[in-house]
Structure formats: C-alpha cells, structure tokens
Length: 142
Image (cartoon, rainbow, N blue to C red; front, side, top):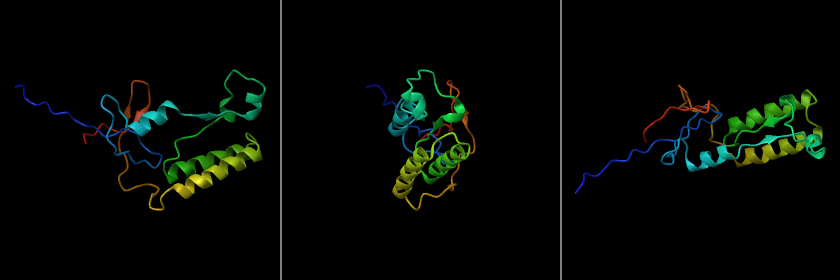
C-alpha cells in the first residue's frame, strides 16, 4: 500500500483594510478562502449616474469613479467614508448619492462587531506580489 500523502492547507492571503490577514483556510489550488475568492471576482466600482443614463460605454474618468472595497471591517468602512466625503467636497458626486452611500455605510457599521478593532494586534508585516500584480499577504501553512 502506498504511503499516505500529507496535504498542506494554507491560510487565505487576503489582507483586510485594517492590515490584518484573513485566517481562514484557502481553497486548494488558490490563494484565497471561498469568501475572498468570490468577492475578488465581483469587485465593483461606482460609475456616475449621468454617464450610465447617457449610455456611456467608455469608463468614467478616475476622478469620478469610486472603487468600494469589501466592507468587512470598521477600517474598510472608515476608508470608504473618507473617499465619499472627499468626492463630495470636490463636487464629484451629488449630495443625494453621497447621502445614500453614507446611509448604507451606517448600516454596515451597525453590522460590524464592536470588538473589531481598527489596527489589530497581528498586522501583516510583509506583502507578496501575485503574477497579476496584486499585493497579498504571505503564504502561511495552517
């Protein structure tokens, strides 16, 4: 009988906006856990409503497009609030859209644990670059 092979499991390499690494087990053959693999496939940007209403096919200028990270901790919510307020101050988004986004962030904030500290105790100290040019946390065997 052949010797039993040991299979190594690795931690997800996603780094949260707070600087803490996801500690879930990565899917075999991938860098990320199921949750972060799915969220990376469906990352979204917010294009101004006027461009969509006018049937624009070209992407909106970077100055008027907000890229929202996954709202998975309080740090991410704080970053998005800052981006919205900067865009609002620069007249890049209208007040109604900003108020709706801020209301959504208020709901997301209420869903976050009050124990989800900003700047956790175990931050990622080094980053690796994927072949696609994306920064991820180091590969750690679980």
